[in-house]
Image: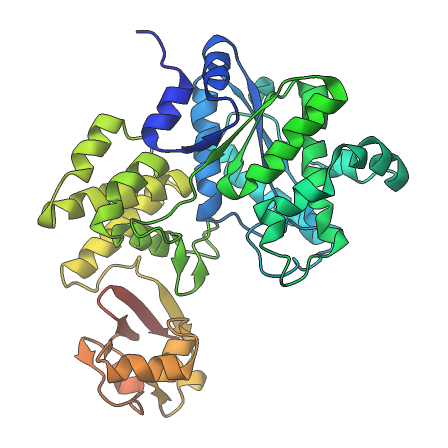
Length: 410
């Protein structure tokens, strides 16, 4: 059977948002192995779920014979991208940026085959750090219209809060990346999130003006729910891909608890399940849709973490859903006898377990009957727990309907 054009695969699964030259891109992807790139600025010590769409795209492209460049933007991170931001990105040391980039590599290696040059992972500091300012402004800056740049959303959104010249150079840097990658590796396409459209256009125009080469751009949908709100935000912040920042169980639970209306979209974007099966699962109704959510949560956890982690998370979730609190895979916090002392308030215990951020949040939850200890609803904001509440050194706190946390007395 003839292999499908990857453009059609990406479109069917709902990835593609905008293209510079749709027909030309489709033809190109159908007739040759295309080198393309996506840039990742290592601004944090872990990738989060917002990056995962880009990683899936790279993986699908590689499966269809194309060559990914996962560009680590350690150079651009030293400036910061003004896109979709309300303030200037904090400046980090190069050592921190480098360590973050190493953490990113571990995730990419789970999804991409880097053997024999099938994918590469260069760093843009290689060509950005040696730049001479005067030469760069003369060779690159001359090709950019300030009027056009100020009309771009990524800058327009920042004008009221104030935009530094420091950040204004970001578009020139990212555009230069595309030009360099085209020259060094014959890279013909740049992909990115929808918020990167202006920067991608900048790179296409710079490459055309400097070398006469025709290159292309494509952006992808941001991960949003049926109401158009960004997904991947938890009470603790972002949904991270690093198990030390978001545990496999928390990661699994997030997808297990999404709204019914978002199941089909998430199955299409976040898993490799064939689309016929995605549509069948997405069409389930009532209690049946929970089976689809289990499959989604299991598959995404398996891809990001491991099959063992996915199995453990699923067993823990099922144990709790079935009324059992015996599973060892439930998130837990250790508490020393000294910390407990003669007793500790439930609110302080929840802060210790990172279940709440503030005491006022804890008081509000208790007043709404949203907290229970060992299956007993807490109805007093001053309620305490003592050693006698621990059974075999363990105590279970439940927040809301679905968040369980075990406290272990050590």
